[in-house]
Image (cartoon, rainbow, N blue to C red; front, side, top):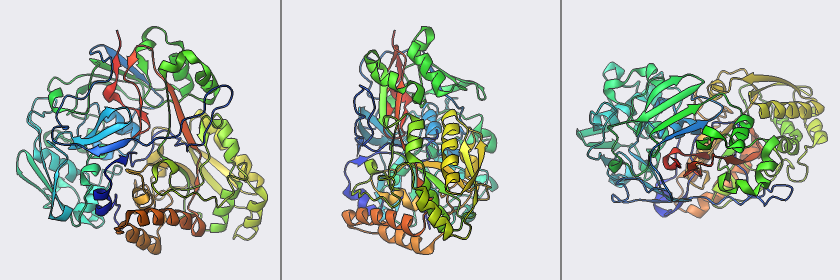
Length: 594
């Protein structure tokens, strides 16, 4: 089955979309439903309000970007976080932290322009507009803007754009999105084409001149311009393509150039003299320099930003949310209001069962009933930090959402040990052992203890395996891994199940988001049927019904706790806000106050 986004009919019918990035979420955590409230005297957490996004015009696609209020140009801004980036090659990027950073150094055909807080437009980035469909949506034509250049001053051409897509087929590319590749071939794209390095080119991408790029899909895709906005489809120069080495030494088409990268410690950026803001409606690029520091836990980040002293006044974080130890202090301190950002995540979060190893559904159901949701919530900081969803599809990003609670999480959030024991007695192994792999962070260490204690009360022995934080997704993304249970997040491109269920239960291969390794022809056929529906309301209802059916009949995962992010920034940092698309602080509006 091919991985799909929304059907052509849906794309044409929806004028304004709620925008959440269809990608894995980089730091182990996830979204909160609207029910979360903080304790003490602080105000309730706000309900998630999906961002509005419309399709912009050619005029909207012109630069410069709309500046945030009070913008000042110049200075050096510092970003502090836990992990360096595992990938800098766009073709390998499918994690929000990496896609977010790459906005500083890489551009795509299309992208999202911030018009105002919560208001976005899909616009042409390198392209003059969002593209022209023809042949019923099977063909898409884009024209490159005048004056777009690489960091050495050479023009960006249609050949670069074609090459960038072709190289995503290469064997060394194991991460990144697969939408466009599959639309161009409509088969197992890695078998259909091996990339351009042996001299073979894709006939389904045409470049009639240096400015024109034409994609010819095997079936209609009215939303191709949305797919091409993904960070994984940013471009790479043909003349500077170093294959695997490009992941460490990218060549900039964006407003900044990497001048220094000490792996796992620092990254420094300076202006790209050949980036022209008149061609870029998305990136403000207000600071002269960026200094990024890694190796700091969220508690360290929060304490530095709380102190707000010296250089830390010009410091912010991309994704380090306030840890449980400081959350109430940050929420209750009125003096922090102007420096506090809070947003429930748009992602879905799950603990996936590896169905290649955990074959007994009774055992998987027992784990769900024994799951200590309330205890995990408390470790994360309570209801102000996490809510307890019960469905695969996210309440806040799914049109036609209908709740269900198969495993009693609402009535028994602490878990139902007796029900779990009863299911184990009916299973093939009443005393199973499972290997639980987790992202080795301080919070997840404590969460692991809670999970281990709860499951062992039910009679399930847990062998915990800590994974390196930087390469966590690479480890669980291997089909032949040695784990039974592990966490991963996913987000939709628009408010329906069409880019969630067909993706997380789509193709099984190294690096794909089907972490449960679920292969079910009947399920695939049903998802294809829903995708082809022309009645949008009926399709939305069908996705919700399928959500429940999957958990009832297969149980490939445990629905995880949905986090609420609360972050601080320094008092001399302007334009900082949590981007609703990626649940991360985007760099495009950041500036340094005098």
